[in-house]
Amino acid sequence: MKNFLQLKWMLALLLISVTCSHLSAQNLKEVFSNTETPITYLGIDFTQARLINLSELPSDIRDRHYPAINDLIVNEPKKYDVAGAFNKSNINSDIGLVAKRNATINLEEMKSTNTADYNRLKSSDIDKLVSGFDFAGKKGIGLLFVMDGMSKANKGAGMWVTLVDMATKKVLLTEMIVGKTSIGFGFRNYWANPVEEVIKQIGKKKYKEWKASYGG
Image 1 (cartoon, helix red, strand yellow):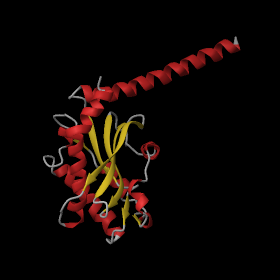
Image 2: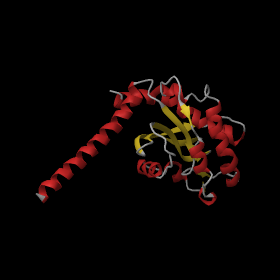
Image 3: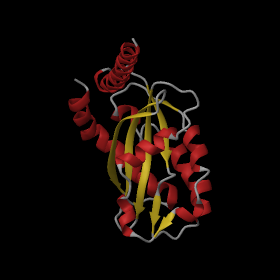
Image 4: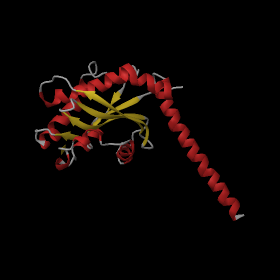
């Protein structure tokens, strides 16, 4: 009788696991197969970013420039067309969650002289970041850009474009895309350029690739 009960519990846990996996896959499929599937744009998480051989004050970057870049993306939706890139008529935005995280960045860890830090993160690092993310009770699909290395010498910045199930803190998709810099006046505009470039890459190419893989 005891063995029978244990077997029932094991089967029940297996069923729950399979069901949760199916729901996550289904959520990702809906993102690419249904233009009305809602997405919440969460902004750019700079907590793992490394600024390679830059001269600006870390405190100024963290407290002024990072918030300014996040505000710019949301306030100029025609230029930074996140909704269009993901084939949505509209995308809600809530960058308050990343604002709180970015405000806690350790100033001593922001800069680097190691060129290898330009692309140091792995998908497992994104899983870890998302697992510790406070989504404040939000549900549905969240879109998060996780900044990796930022280098003027490389004329670019790498971002992990990440779709997450906010209710379960499960990463549904994450891929690192490099956006090139171009001429821009000031720190904010210079480093917003790679973000614009990444959004354009999604709209022109990456969305079609992801749709082919996950959209059914």
